[in-house]
Amino acid sequence: MTVFSKLLYGSLHVKAYDWVEPPFVLESKGPGYPQVDLLLKFDTVKIMLMAYAFCCTASVFRSYLLIEFFLSGAVRLAKLAVDKVLNAPCTSVLYPKHGGNLHCFTAVTPCAMLDILTPPYTGEERKCTYYHDYPYSAFIKYEISRSDFLDACGSAAAGNAPVYDGEEEEYAWLAELESPRDLYMRLGVYAGPTIQE
Image (cartoon, rainbow, N blue to C red; front, side):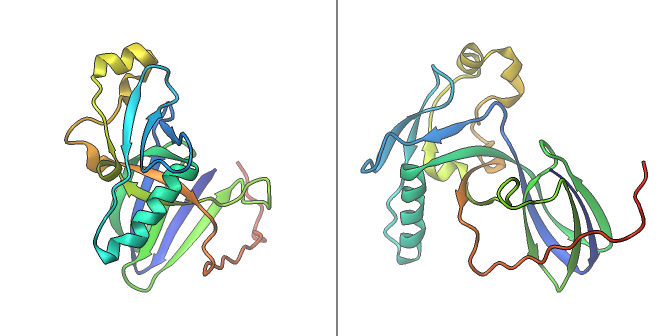
């Protein structure tokens, strides 16, 4: 999906990710493992997942969700593409594989955003997917050298090697969520002049 956006007025914060390619997907061995030894989708690359048990009251619910996501499904590694405040008027284009198509808008001031999606969401065929982002460094620790990664995945993956020390802030694990219950989107059909190439 390509998204053409224009911030009409106000300001908003944009945090956007692109999937790491080739995909780094963590899958659970099964329920009941507070610490899970997981494999990436590459045969020889092993990682260790650490689901931390927080003691602080404020973190209990979050920790429970993290353990549930990691043990009942999969999470996928994404790289931060955009993390900034936009001020109107400004435009942006999000492409399917780069530029931050997995994005979150947070109003800084009252604002309005016009989005044109192509192709549009259509029922079961093209649904809007929601994710929760988890910091990379909070839940996973592994040691792997760049040469080991390239041996396992091939030299074509050189630009997408695993995260190295000092790069953790640029990555996050995304876990798919149900549609938020308090979200309401009003869809419209373009009825303006014919768009020509």
